[in-house]
Length: 343
Length: 286
Image (cartoon, rainbow over all chains, first blue to last red; front, side, top):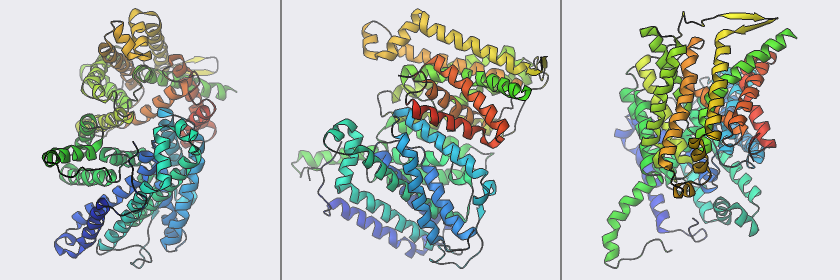
């Protein structure tokens, strides 16, 4: 379903997003929040996973190509930053650039043949790619092999993208990441390219008959999505100060890209944020509460939750929010209020 | 030369096991177009069933594998009733994500109850027995598993192709609404297909504790291998899955022996990519 939207113009919805970002920028000013380092950790992870899911959303949601291979691109970005710091003793910034470029290149090389496959065949091919990359990195001496890369102690600050005492620096970095990726997707929603992408998702043959080069559109979207996933990976490694293949290039990590987006609402701007805002606190707090009880209880709860959301509301959490909003809005409409959604 | 033959034999026997694991997934995928992500966890649970029957009641896996099959038949039917039923007709990923949640649930439930320890049965009938065939060493547990696999895959194929029930299954797979108009209870077909698919994988998991260790993570790799068996074989084709499984077993053994053990799965997944790039619907698909 392609919703009509005016090119670039600011709308009421955008004001909501700007207000939200302004509010989030003020969070570290509240000392009660910054003093609670677990809460800061959860907030940073929400911003990170929302950004990751939004990067996946470009090709997976708007483009309709369900990739389970994004942990590969995420991992390449992570290794880009990690190797710049650990192997070459540089600042992470050049590594981030190289990592994003490498992620986009690998994505195009993998996707070109994979896009010929349809449905489950495509999904399983992307699983296979993750397993292959995981095994290769495990035995690749140059990237640190199975031991991974451990960060040395260097001077903290934006130059090295590293902080030791407080999480405020990481929080602002995550917020910038979030604004950047959500901004790009918001721009694409109103841009010609975004229409092409959604048209290809809805019907590739129809789109092609109207002159859309569907292969070029999908490859461009995949490259952009992979580069942004790589950028998220670079932030992830800077935050954890270590990287190994199991941490970043695994099916579980790939599933997180997909789960957060789909449970939030795929192909919508708000979906990835909703998904991350619900799933990440649940994951972190169940782990803190029950993670120590002989293991597994947090993941049992998480598994049940996934089943319940998928079974009850296939449009995800944004579908649940829409249902609730509809219930509140209906009386106002009946009184002859302004009609919504006809911009 | 003898080494090559030995590696090939090990690969083929292992491939038979993969075929036994994959045939249930193949049936479910072919009839309902659903990827069951918890398939490997079914294997793991069936392994625990026979492990505990062997450990507590001293029943040999060769007998208790039928209990494993029955247990997973019920589990499969329950999965359909409680989860899969509600994902049919919804976006194609729904079933995959819901069963991923189920896999997470089952895996961690076992982790919680049985600890992550590796467990293996000792003193089973087949045990570590082997026999010599020319220069080849044939491991008896693997050989019996391969025979069970051939019988089960053959019976499943016969059931789908040549029985009244199988025709109803095929009709449901081709066109659900038309099948309903012909008086077929498609709801019951789906339930039974999920149950029978579960039973075959239950037999596979049931026989494994004779020679493989049980632990909560054992299923994950079986899920992936079963996915690529079925996809490589071609949409819902049982002979395709059998051929693909043996091919995978052989490539795994050759890659593991002649390149390096870590590369055996690289070789397997690389094989899948090579096959689907050449034949986007699998070997026997169209």
